[in-house]
Length: 374
Image 1 (cartoon, rainbow, N blue to C red):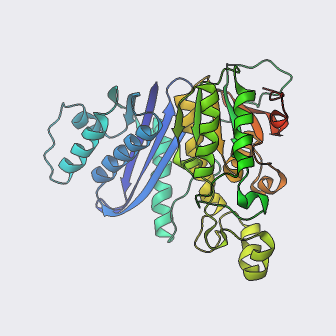
Image 2: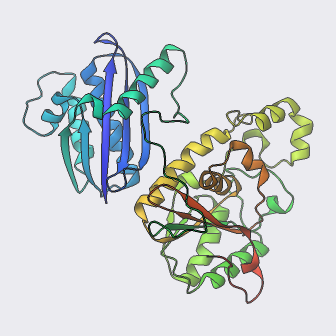
Image 3: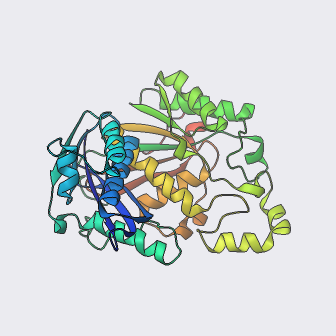
């Protein structure tokens, strides 16, 4: 696997209010796999540039820790120092360079390339966004539109031939739990499956047998790990845990029904339904869930390129992946229904588009049946 890191940092005053930006791309397709940006308070340009490099290396490590990297920066100083051609003399630089070297040593190989500033616009934009956000008292968040990027490819439809072999995600919701049967908010609590839920998981495994599944990836929560394990016993495929596939944290609403929440927290519920950036009391917003689910998806597409992956997760992460595949607005989360142990299938193409092949398919739960369209 080959990845490209583009990193930059800036300081408005040198030293002055500073920030960094980092982008991780697939070296083959150029697809953006991760973005990082942060304001740094008052530091120098060089410190900000090194912090951008470190953030890019950390993001690449999360995606593919054994990848071969090319790091592209418009900082001649950082490129030459990290390549070993220039000595590191400044005391502020030495610990940062050492941290970057330690991170870089974990990869298969790392090559540093100087590029002119006009070819580093994406990382530069992120750094400036982080500084602007700090000046306005905000925390940086990814922009909905990347103005310096080319328009995405026209989405492929089911009528045309695929441009590449896809990575296929089989999105399996966990089996029944006591909360799902009573339609209660079930977030990050470790709720086990019922006997019916275990049977549903076994039925899914039996229906998937012989269907060429290459990997099983699951949320860390008990109900999904139990589901994944039942399937894995049938398929004899190892299970990998991905923390970012966990359910949304519903905070104080955990264990309550919607009607009970409406009675106890009417204003908070209305705000939550109206705005995806609003979280339940002491919980997590759908906007925050979106960010980590995007990261999880990007990891899967890098690690399991052109493979068929069974992803065992929860209602919100699965709906979020479907929403991303459909390029649908946030309100789409409220317009999809997912039964327990239901299957949804998405093909992700390396050139950009995705195709939803099925949604809320439960016919694998019927005795002797196999999953439908996949």
